[in-house]
Image 1 (cartoon, rainbow, N blue to C red):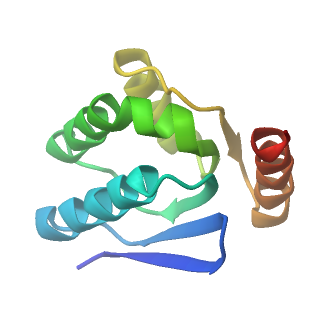
Image 2: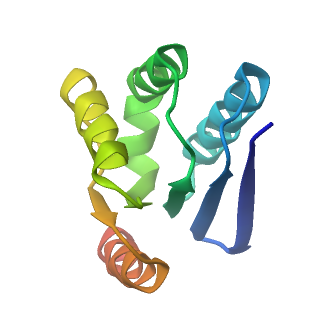
Length: 131
């Protein structure tokens, strides 16, 4: 079964890595962690490495939409951006479909590699934290 790994060692740059397809319990755990990050009241940004996520079931995509809608205000206030790393066009298309239903309240950009994603996100963090 899949797993989502969270890394806060470079806070406020957070990292989240999907390892395979998650069951519903793991998916909910990861939504809970993302909600906790958004509600901390601290500026942060997140690099989401989804290259190994696989095809996310409709119920889990719905969970992402509900999470975005529920935490929209916290995300807009505290999250500098989301750098999404995908390995193929199908993954990019799934995110695009989600963003049509629940437009992101934060800047989001798609990447193919980690260094580019982190560089963009560090710029977003600097902008969000500027006085």
